[in-house]
Image: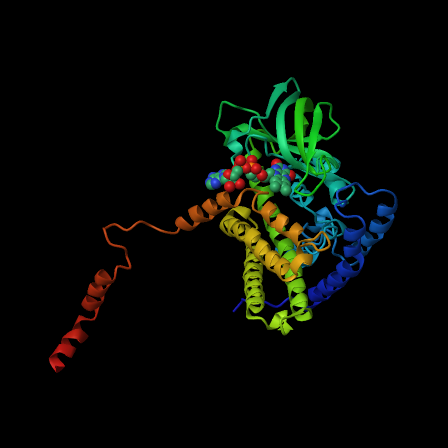
Length: 433
Ligand SMILES: Cc1cc2nc3c(=O)[nH]c(=O)nc-3n(C[C@H](O)[C@H](O)[C@H](O)COP(=O)(O)OP(=O)(O)OC[C@H]3O[C@@H](n4cnc5c(N)ncnc54)[C@H](O)[C@@H]3O)c2cc1C
């Protein structure tokens, strides 16, 4: 009987340490340097953050999703899930623990598909936490359907020249390099005709036209770049994983990225539930505490149940990834997690905001940021609708159409078959009458 929901006591000790460390040492960074976690470390920020990273390494929790050959602990996805649900409370925590998106996914594909020289140049400093990276795939006219991308690389001797536009390239402004998905052969299907290139951000012709912000951020202070690749020349060895391999690489990258977001979302949703419960116990109105009102109890019960369902789903999917070591085999459940994630965070954050009254919608509480975060999760790494179709297609693979007119569970047909099967007893029944 192998099912077991216990955490191994040794690892639980590390999780308890991480929980205290994030609350006491890392969350203050969110308040003093908000939204600056992807700005390369310098000056007083470096002085404050470097010792925290060193402490994480001493505890053996740095980049734990990676195997030992890449400087991690080889803990795998299930242990990472338990850690990430702690880190999800804080913007800075993934940076301090060496497991922030989009760098984890980018590191994963370079580790998987990169040459030794590419690993030396990009992967090792990335894993050291010394530089940032950007995944540049979406275009202004197309995102959910990558077969519509038009950014093009044309071979010129021993180099390639890239031309086109990319949109929502997160962290491009602070990244040292970009992983760009482009058309290399327009004469075959997009699944064979697109490739990935590793492009240093300072390559001539890489033009960040605008840094688009999310709602509430100031103009041009966002982190999602509109980039014009204008005659960007890169050498042949900038190609990642070979010509025509972009779709295969993208699936590897996005599988990991999606489940890691889900792990952190558990932490954020739990933070909202914690705040909801504290407020419900603290606030009195119309003769009783909020926690005594049945509406509020409904909010708490629904939120607890939603979070528990989501957490079990994420942990189960992480366990499957470790078991099969193949994202393709777990595609259905990763997509299902991705579908559920925005609603869980939205609903819990919204209820928590509601019971905080006016204070809940102010910039003195984090709820509207969480609600925006939920909206983002319904788009980033692919819109919910597309993931729903993936889930449905995968689910339908396990079914067959019926041969006749009536469904298999049609009661008259089943009853007739049951009567035939039990005929000898039915005959005896009649005989007794
Ligand atoms: C905060 C944030 C960060 C991001 N970071 C990155 C990044 O680092 N790199 C990168 O390359 N991209 C990034 N993206 C882009 C993201 O991957 C795209 O937004 C997403 O793939 C959808 O593409 P689109 O925005 O062009 O929407 P479209 O493809 O135009 O789709 C618009 C809407 O149409 C509907 N729709 C689309 N397809 C279907 C379908 N098949 N069936 C039913 N309805 C459908 C959905 O409602 C969808 O939201 C980021 C996005 C956000 C919000």
